[in-house]
Length: 377
Image (cartoon, rainbow, N blue to C red; front, side, top):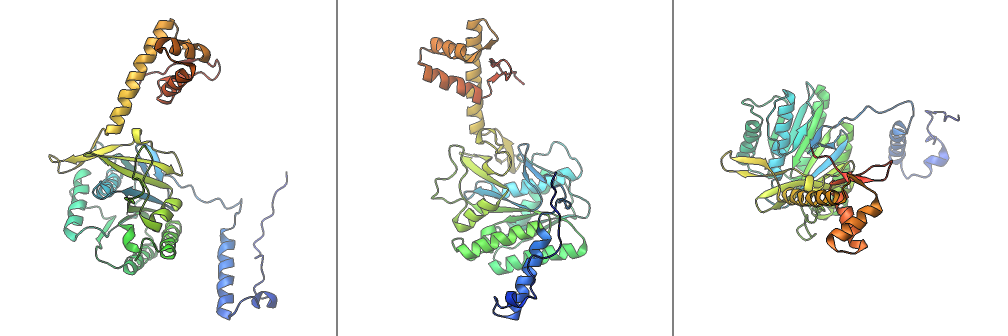
């Protein structure tokens, strides 16, 4: 077996006159030399495996966030974005002491390590609304006292430059103190640029946030508004964040979670994911409860429609198997049975078979090739 030999020698000798003549000044030569050295430290080395990156957050049982990555919460105004940030915060509180029975709207968190911090920047709400939101998260998690690891700041009205400088300064402060940053929650990432359609500025911010996530081995959660003219979230396809900022965040994020509000119910789903997708008909739902004075989990209209459709299809398939007197059918026999039962053509019968399979009503044995009813939970 041929193995590659690792070399620590830079590929370019920056002291070589021919190299130095390429650049206009000594400062530029030093900048290039520093860039090359930085890249060399990152060069693939089979003997230097990066540490494992276990998930820090899940939605509906699907891992959506690992260290060194960005994730996005995308929604129209008043769809429950801040409620989700509160639910994420409550999920971390619940995981700290393995508190059961906490409604975190479908979010789940890993246990925050001792000495770590959760940094929350709220650029959207007034100090009073920010205060109420954190108190609500504590009530959601059954906590009377705020955890010491929660560092939450109401920064509405701060300028874009101030917000970016503050974020970097806080992360440097934590690093100097030896504290790990479990996650950064930014409720209003658009406030960190002057213009969400300024390509250079937006790409610069996203690169900066991604770089900070990697440097500090944290997760950066971005809350952004959905583009109202992009068709919005429909037919199980997530909407797009506003402007060049939304586009660049979508491209770079590990997970893009869409909040779709239908009537009074908001569903969380995601099809633009680096890991497993969260279909709309399987995504968690929530709505506002006057009784509890907070959003609570509920069954979304999409989930209810999907379950009714699945139940009707199962009843139909049970009747079909019963009429054939068999528990398993080969594909050709299955199509023939559907065609006869419904009085339809082969192509329509094939569509019906595929619909039953996609709904999880029937399953195929990979060895025999026969299909049968799926077991019910």
